[in-house]
Amino acid sequence: LGSSQLGPSCLVSRRRTPMFLSGSLSSPLHEMDASLCSPKLVATTAAVLAAGTVAVANKPASLGFASAPSPTVRRLRSVQTTTIDTELAAGIAAAKMEVAAALGAGMVPGALASLCLGGAAALTASRARSARQTRHAVTTRVVKVSTKAAAANEPQTPELESNAVHVAGDASLGFECETGNYHTFCPISCVSWLYQKIQDSFFLVVGTKTCGYFLQNAMGVMIFAEPRYAMAELEEGDISAQLNDLAELRRLCTQIKRDRNPSVIVWIGTCTTEIIKMDMEGIAPKLEAELGIPIVVARANGLDYAFTQGEDSVLAAMAAKCPPLPAPLPASPSPHAPLVIFGSLPDSVAKQLELELKRQGITVSGWMPSTRYKDLPSVGEGVYVVGINPFLSRTAATLMRRKKCKLINTPFPIGPDGTRAWVESICKALGIEPKGLEEREKQAWDSVKDYLEIVKDKSIFFMGDNLLEVSLARCLVRAGMTVLEVGIPYMDTRYQAAELALLTRTCKEMGRPLPRIVEKPDNYMQVQRIKEMQPDLAITGMAHANPLEARGINTKWSVEFTFQQIHGFTNVRDLFELVTRPLRRNKSLPEEWQTFVKEGAAPQLSEA
Image (cartoon, rainbow, N blue to C red; front, side):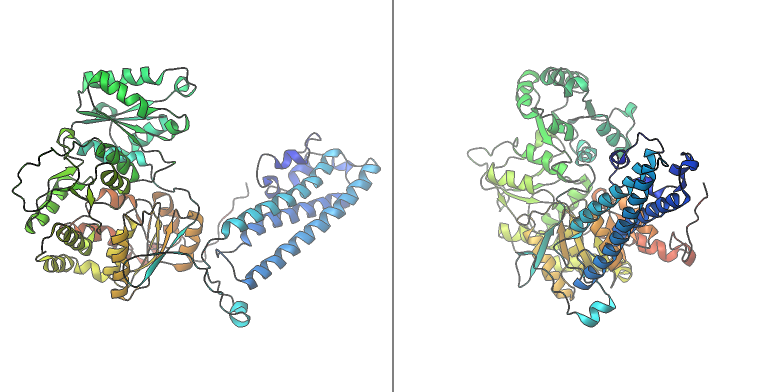
């Protein structure tokens, strides 16, 4: 930094903010000959650098906490920023004059001139960064900033109108979209439960070493265990098109057939296969004909799909391979039309839901995915299909459009109220009068009375990860909680129309406000809203759990709701065990252990 060859462009080109300003002010001056610099010039330059440090440090912080500040706050910040800019510009102008005089007298090297010019570059970078963050902070929602000046002198700022999606009932839910990015777990993790569900399958994930490391760590499966999935690691030759994709995949699939002989091979595409435009859909039919094994191609890249949508992509590809109904329909002892349930659940949970339907006189014709690929159900016109999870919208669309099935639009069997509504919707579609469901729901709620006392009148905030957020929010509102916000990576309002209608009706019956639903939420803005609202519990991804806990916010990992058995009447206690665990844990801790940060403790900075 002290070299005379370094100009102002070198000081700011490598970073958005000139980080040299936050270091020791004496370090660049120390490396130069102090005899060539006048004391006044050194003092002026140090003052300019100090002003630049203050400006760079204070401008982002001056954006404050709100998403869209009130006019008073905007004026106050404008005055603050203008004052800083004026002082910094005046200091730089004075320094330039001093440097010009010193250069004319031959008293100062060129490095010090570059250093002062770097202050001007710092001012420009600081302004640009401040403008970027100001634009980034504006969302479609007006967050009221409580300042005394605004309360005393200005009327309340009206909230902006958001795009309202009307659902059944006399109320509507407002939907907003913030960044357009996915902040979720990787969708290729669907392999972890699908390869266990489909017992005669083999999953081949085509990606890089990063994908392999993720699967190895996320699923905790050792290499020597030889599970029924593998990684086809792309190397430089694959990415640069020096190797033939067809030949490489033929070699791998031939080895899989020889060693494992599965009934189906499922190719999972990743981000890398999307970027290099690998034609997996075009290669699969050729290898199917050669090997005599069905090959299902599913895209599960994190560019286009959220966490649980990886399963949706696999099931949609399998739905296209379901056998058609035989031309003359065989005589069935069931008095109703065929019913197929789609969605992956553990066998024990699937059996429990089948028994609930059997109590109503309904026979399930098949599940997709089935335990064995060869047992995929026959689908076609006249077959009713119903989903088990709210993230299976692509599978539902495939069954309706390509297979001409009839979709039963229903809430999902998560929580006692959702399970009752799910069974009732199926009964209504098949022309059967439901019996005893009100008693079953009451028994399920009675079994978790101790947990209901814990969550009563508590508030909850969903950051969004696994697309189960709307169903969980509806269940917890019925349990007595207030849902402040429902963040969700992707929302198909047609597939979840019945769930949204039930959420609206539940909020009205329980006297709770309708939650704010944010699609593809911006994590930065969500953290600001959490700090403002101070919820009793936040359902969040693993990346934000510890930082929020350190700030006194109880958290629960959203990924746990994906792997836990929470469907049906019999698993209600497991569901509320997850929800209440952080509340019960902190309640049992000593008072001094309930926060990670000690009140009033100042950070200790080392001299080094």
